[in-house]
Length: 308
Image 1 (cartoon, helix red, strand yellow):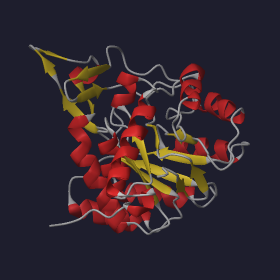
Image 2: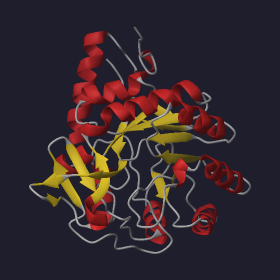
Image 3: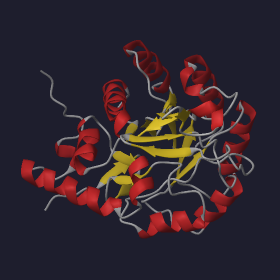
Image 4: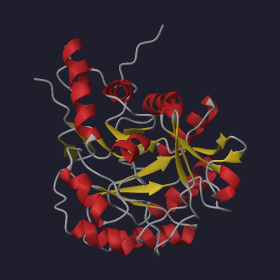
């Protein structure tokens, strides 16, 4: 019998699929829905210090091969998510608390608040939100990332990972991996949506914020996501696990993320469209592929992408 068990740091999970931050994780009802699903774990909406309403609507639009969104980080604030996670038994199957500061100072305030709380699970520092007007993604400032992480690890001692934007140049993979390898990160989550795409219906943009510019997700971005997963799998030290995110609509997509090196795989657009029942389907399809190939565990094929 094949198993989908996996791990990140010292935390074990019964299965390898979960939600992507920003999808089905805004409030208690949505988070409870994830906990009741067959997902291996869940991640909260990226929290800011204060609650945010986000960008004006319409700000999300499903399109033929995925989605475009400019949500603007709507969230209920760090205190809500910390209070919610207090009610969750962390244990070995930790949820992920995602945080993102709107400034360097806010990032430190958020992480200090987490450090002084009762939460001792996994923390994701989101360096890659592309949809905040006037706020560039820190993930594209490699020296800025190094400076921030140097400051963070001077005081933060909980299991921490970073969520990255997609990179498109081999030199950028090299440079970012060199920086990340200098720190005791538990994981890297790659990728966030491809920033500032434009989708047009007839003669009009599909979403309201930023005159229609928004993050691209879904099937459109799977090749980019797989490239980023595998590039970092090749470059990061073994102690840093990889979470693969982007373009997953089937068990085959999950399989490919793991083949490229992912330990967990997050679902975004497809979860938004299909709901938490999608986890049952994805796992059944992945197990069918593994059975056909004779794989008993994810370790049998993780990172073992073949080249011509």
